[in-house]
Structure formats: C-alpha cells, structure tokens
Length: 371
Image (cartoon, rainbow, N blue to C red; front, side, top):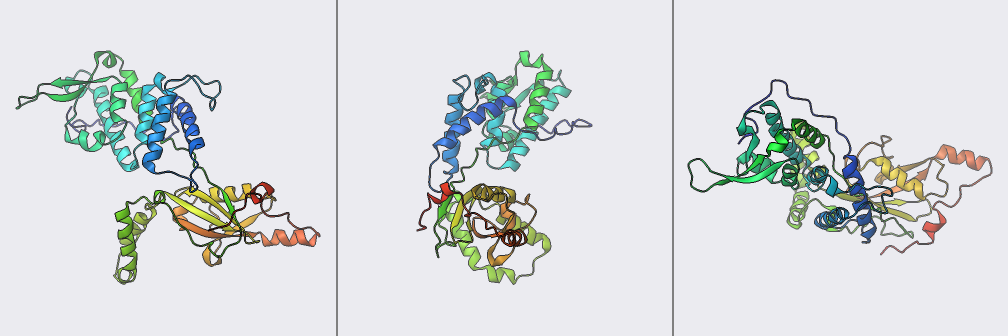
C-alpha cells in the first residue's frame, strides 16, 4: 500500500458533516485548556503560538494522569482512556495549516477505505513510511503517528525491494483487521473532527481619554509572519502606489486580498466612548463581528440600550454580525467609536431621563492611563 490513490472506489463515501470534537476529547481538552487560560496573564493577551502549543501539550499530559478535574465536575473521562480521540485532537489543533490538515486527513481516510474495500489484499494493510505521499501529506502533521498506532498499526522493518537494508512500514495488526467496523468508526471520527481552541482572554482594559488612542504597539504574536516577512510586508506597502498602477484582473486582486486576510492571528480593538474613555479588548482575527458587539455590551451599565459602532471616518460597521473581523478591515488593530442609537436616546431624553454612566462601576474603578 505505497500510494493512497492506487485504488479508487466507484462511489466513495461522502465526507461526514463537520462536528465538534468527541465527548472524550472535548471534556479532557476543556479541562486542560481552562487551566491554561487561567495561567495566561500577559498584558497583551496571547502568548506565542509555540508557547501556547507546548503548554497545551503539558496540560493534556497532566490530564491523562488524573480522573476528572475541578473544571469538569463529575467527569472521569481523560485522554488515557481514548488515545484515538487524543490523537485526532492533536492533528486538528496542533497543526496550523488547516488545508494541509484536510489533505492529510483525506489521505488517511483513503488508506482506511482501501483496507475496508480490499480486506483480503495484504498490500493495503502495509504503509511504507518513506513513501512520497505519506511523507508529504501525513508525516508532516503532528498527531498522525499517534493516530495510526492508536487504531492498531504497528511499526515493522520489512525487506525492501532492490536494496539490502529493510524499510520501516506501518502494518495493521491481525486483531484490528478482524474488527473492520472499528476502522470505519475511527475514520468517520477523524473526518468529522474540528480543532479544539483555547478561549481567548480578552485582556479587557479601560483607559482614560487620550490623544494616543489610535496608536497601537502590537507584539509579534499578532502577526502570522516572521520578522523577515514583516520587513518584507513593510517594503511592499511602500511600493503600493506602483503596484496599484499596474493593470490587474479581478481574480488577481481577489487572490491578493485573500493573502492579506491571512497575515494576522489577532487584532487589538479600542472603542472610544462618548465621554472619551477607551475600552480595549483582544480578538482572534477571524472572530465574528458579533463577538465585538457582545464584548462592548457586557461592559455597559445600560446594557439594554441599542448602540452602534463606527469605524474610522464615521462609517457604521456592517449589520452582518457573522462577518469576520479581518473581512471588515479591523486587523491587526482598529479604533472604533461608540454611539447610542440616536432615536432611542431622544425618546429617553424626551421622557426626562438620562442614560446611566456608560461603563459599569467596577470597570471604571480600574481605569488606566494610556502610555
């Protein structure tokens, strides 16, 4: 079984609908990630991607040694009871490029389909680890080796054709081969999984009115780029006028815009309130606009009053709260302006009332000076 595409079923099974992680993975990961979130206390919010990943790994290893946790009361599920779920979670969560994850997962599924469709053919029960397809699509993904071993494959040295030294293969155990339904179940579990993401700490802060409101100093974590790539982006921006003068097709422009959307991991947003105070929070670059509205509403004393958020230039943000922040041009930072719904505000004033102070007292008590 050296190439996953040797045999193609006439009617391949449709990919199962996407769904959240299995209960086993979700419970254990939730406990581990909750502890991780409590440990993050940097002023700017997220730590580097490598640091987050390493810390999650430590938390998951710790989770595998205990039965339940304070974050998941009454739960005895942990990763040591389901290594398949743990390996799937790693594949989806620890690998950054989700396009490569999909390609690798689909290739693994093809391997398992071949075994299911041709149970009597020995060649499909062996996977050569140095095979080009395996190296390019699977070996490069973290968690894939754990998955193969968890579902019943064993590493074996076998004689290689036309060479003296043996080569390493994954060989399916006879025990697993006798239970084809388990392979099919694990395949569907793999195809239907999704990444487990740690809940981002908003690092909510309130600042006094400041002329520095539109000035942002962002840590490197915000950028999905290396230091050299950031320098290159700065150089490219300096050439923007020349580039815009070149005739480009619509497809070329759209491709360039899509590349721009993927440059950032996070965005730092500030909301200027009517009294000049600033409310600040950190968001994933691909979070929905609705998350920003919810974040602001939670901070308001009169959280029942409708309000609007305006971008630079006084332009009202889209009413489609499902739009991603990077699609709205709100990355890697942005200063928004808060405005009460004027019609409702006029009705309140006409009734002889005034809105309470804008922010909740507990937030105002921790107000800072923006430096």
